[in-house]
Every structure is written in C-alpha cells, then in structure tokens.
Length: 140
Image (cartoon, rainbow, N blue to C red; front, side, top):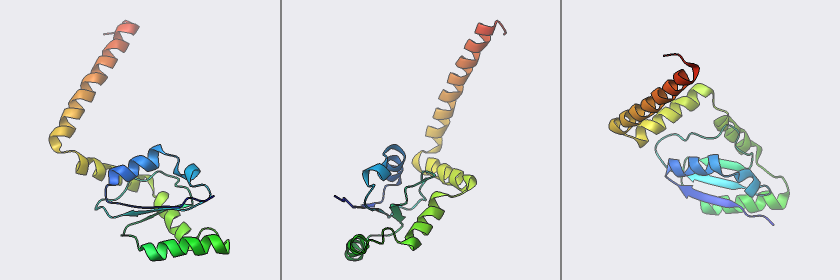
C-alpha cells in the first residue's frame, strides 16, 4: 500500500520541525512526499533528505502532481531523476549556506530584545556552570 503526501505550507518553522523531528523517509518509504513551500525565507533543511521527499517553492499544481505520481507508480520508473538531483542539491547545501539560512531564521523569528534576553540568560547559566567546575577543582 502506498500513501503519497502532498503538503502545501507557508510556515517555515512547521516544515523545519517536521523534517528534523519526524522520520518522513520511513513513513513514506514506498511513496512520494511533495512539500510545496510558499513562505518567504529559505528553509533550514536537514542535511540528508530522503530521495522520495521533494520540496518546491511554489503552490502545488494538484492535477499535474497527482497524475505525475500515478504515472510514476504505474510505469514503475520510481523517482524522476531530474527532481531527485534538484532535491539533492538543496539538501546538501554547504555548511556556510546552511548557517546563513539558520541565522536568517533566528532573526526573522525573534526580535532584538528576545535575542538579547536569551543571550543574557544563557551567559548566566554558563557562568554558573563554570563556577561549579571551579569549585569542584578547587580553583578560583
């Protein structure tokens, strides 16, 4: 039995959460997962997306998508090579590009005050941990 997923979404955080936390490849092992992303910022994708998961930056053309899935399954040809190569290129973006996307994500999600407050809280936690380490070792 095959269950193909066609998902349209404009919320990058939701797509990123699902792709990082859910083994979408295992769920759709014998089928396709087409994600149509219509948001504005770039996605921070996991490094190795399964070959059967495709992400498009447009609204879906449902008639062509559904008939394409049916044709691919009936012909037995599996995944279209052109789409696979395009997806592979996106998923295997260099580290620097992935970091730029992640930083853009942070600045679009949180304002300056939220980031500053978070940095202050994490700095205080790190200082406490360092003090505990110093106390354990007997150094001041």
